[in-house]
Image 1 (cartoon, protein in one colour):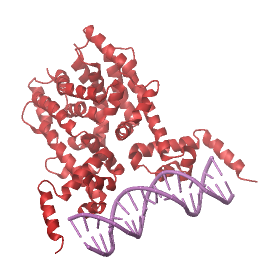
Image 2 (tube, protein in one colour):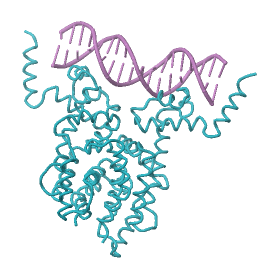
Image 3 (cartoon, protein in one colour):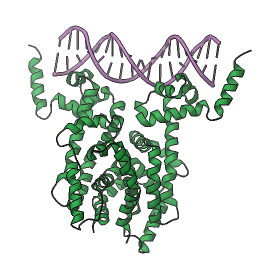
Image 4 (cartoon, protein in one colour):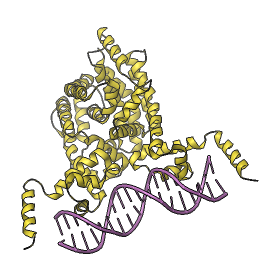
Length: 214
Length: 214
DNA sequence: GTCTATAGCCAGATAGAC
DNA sequence: GTCTATCTGGCTATAGAC
């Protein structure tokens, strides 16, 4: 009798929660998002997944392809957050308040995400062209129109949609990208930094609304 | 007759503007700031410097030490910009306006700088501890006091100095870090992006002042 | 100080047994 | 599907001639 039956059973049990392919993907997420494409090591991914290095190639053929799987996954996580701001029908003020509060909670769960995406896009800017082909890629058109509308109605002071959107992203995302710098300038530790970021859930939206509301 | 005399003359001519050591440092700046520590290759630096690879080791011993020289240099370029906001005696409004306008001009000359510093600090957060020992390392204390003062005098609405400083940095720096993303969301090319950034020289300071001024 | 040649290592990828 | 063993190439770093 061969070990086939045993393997079958083991596999079945694993599949309850996750198969080898997703175990690898999760390990790869951790390593790539922390170290970047260039700094990541296939050996480290294999260790974290608790499997043999050659399995990575069996499932994903190459480091490059494994990386791309991780990257697309990360971007797919972020895009819906942005689309809420760009395409929801509620007022600008409502969206600013909810995005700010939600995004900061969201990013505390995925601390390496913004840095990872931004660094890898700067390393390889053409990569974004492929992403743009996807349906659901964030687009600013509807947001611009909404901003113009609310200005027309006397709700907002004049501002270009592009600038407002950049400002919203900047105020929310930047502190999580520049965390080591901010901790150093302000002389604060992790605990105080987290407190500061929690304050920002309302601080940032007040700051924006104060500036743009008539 | 040996070639010593020739070498001496050649060296003398080079020294008019730059010696080998600084030629290497400049080449290293380009490569490290674009590719990061992990992505950079000593061969590429040598090529860009127009010299032999072994010279890099002759002058800087190792890739790590060459990298550190580049990093400290980059940081030393950025720190005075920040200290202007933190320590100058002019009013907050004046400083916000001048920093915003100057910084955007500054960064167009050094496009990879913020990304480089931020990525490398995230890769190796302990590195900033060494920088903090330097005199002139940006510190927020005086700025905090000034903000409190102006609030007391009824010039500014209540806000923590930390939040205001983070907001100033975020609004100015973020678009240059997230350039590929912004270009994709807004569907604009390089030329339109530069125009948008030029608009921000006044847009950003108005946005901030609007929000904090009584 | 600058070059050529090469040591020595490490990482990604594959072959092949089970 | 999973493992061990190994190939192959590329990279940092050094030895040594000039």
